[in-house]
Amino acid sequence: MEMIVCNPQEGVYAATPDYVHAMEVRQPERLLFVSGTMGLDEAGIAGTDLDMQLKLIWSNLKRILAEAHMGTDNIVRLTSYLRDAAYVEANQNARLAALGNRRIPTTAIVVETLSDDWLVEIEIIAAA
Image 1 (spheres, rainbow, N blue to C red):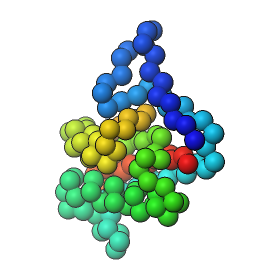
Image 2: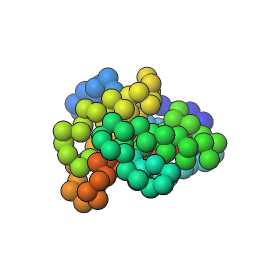
Image 3: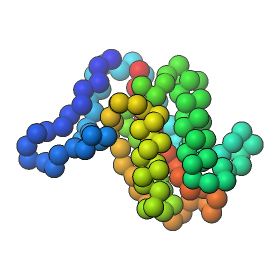
């Protein structure tokens, strides 16, 4: 499998250091579509604050990926749903920490429909 970042140099706004416009995935054998994942522990209880929920989300995503014999290097698309726009920076920092230097197409959406104790939900697509 080959992953190619697609960032046109002309005719569209520039991508930022942690963002790409598109990712071409050539010859994947498998695709994994992960439902929105919340910052809940094994008992289904939400983390007490934003940082704890982000830690739980990434722990949960890593466990789900491992079940499919994948890791964070296999993530090719990510969408974050945030209860509040003030969560953008913390969410970005958690994503950067989880992905290291890898840049992938991402979208963050502010929503008001999450349950009261859910602050962030993240869904991913992975390829192997």
